[in-house]
Length: 235
Ligand SMILES: Nc1ncnc2c1ncn2[C@@H]1O[C@H](COP(=O)(O)OP(=O)(O)O)[C@@H](O)[C@H]1O
Ligand SMILES: [Mg+2]
Image 1: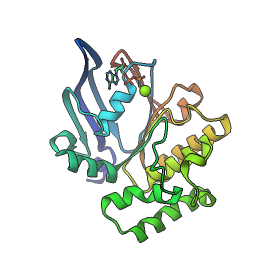
Image 2: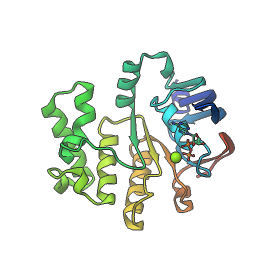
Image 3: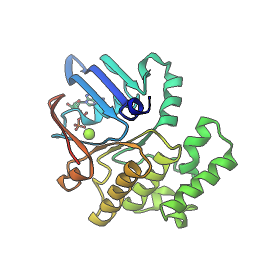
Image 4: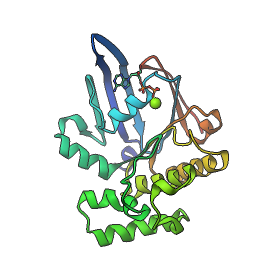
């Protein structure tokens, strides 16, 4: 039913808890999160440092495992998958932009952007061609041959963005992506998220402290001490 599909949840989180054990101490980073995110949403997540934002993102993306609870991504219970299958699922369906970009340092920008496709098993030639197209789209094709570590923070974030969108993922996660950027680069990156959401119909989950960017999204959740304390939709 088309109407049903339109409102389909991309992400369904139920009863999620995460406890880290550090020596004899237990840190309860997530204390019971229920969250359903729809395909059309651009979700902004904020809250004080240490409230569990990154932990929540890492678990939804299947990078970290929950202590309790389930995460379904378009109906797939990701922690019922074996580690390798979950890794492949993530690389095909999710794009992640971390606070600091991690690069394969010996590879060029073009090769770094192509890497997710090569890992998925596509041919090197086709992967590099697709990477070139994404760089063209983002107007950064002149960076293709450089090493990512030689670039400015703003350029690195754009390349990180290219790498996150190369496999046309359902969901793009960004963890304080503009933390280290000047305001012009930050604004450019943020407008790319908006475009991906509105024109390319991707679900966006953006963690940011910066109030300026809150209205870019159409839903906002606030976290406090391992829980969701506010949830508002708008726009
Ligand atoms: N790998 C880890 N080992 C131990 N404690 C962790 C680990 N990751 C996060 N924590 C703790 O979990 C809590 C939530 O952290 P985090 O999700 O990074 O918060 P935020 O992203 O909102 O700043 C913090 O108390 C943090 O110290
Ligand atoms: Mg964090």
